[in-house]
Length: 88
Image (cartoon, rainbow, N blue to C red; front, side, top):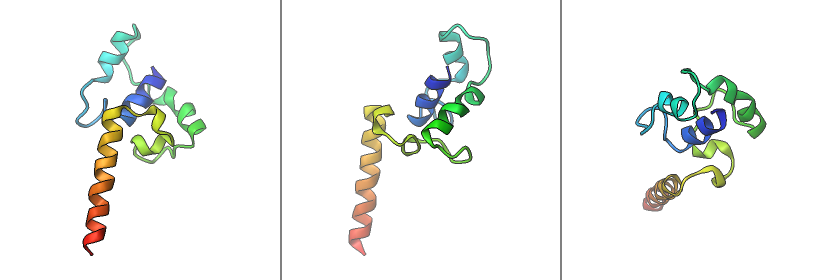
C-alpha cells in the first residue's frame, strides 16, 4: 500500500483533485482503513525525497514512476514556461 500510495500521489491520483480515495486503495488491497503515508516514509527517505516537500512527479527523481498523463502534463508546463521566458 505504501508504494502504491507513493506512485499514486506522485501522479496526482490521490490528494487534492485526485480521482481515487485512499479508502478505495486500502479496500482494493484488502487492508484495514487508514493512511499508508507513514509506512511510505522509509521508501521516500530511500528515494531522497524531503519529508517536508510536497510529493509530486519531480520529487521521485525518475520519470519511470510517472504515468504518461503526468509526464505529458509536466512537458506541457515546461514548454509553456519556456515560452514565457522567450517573450522577455
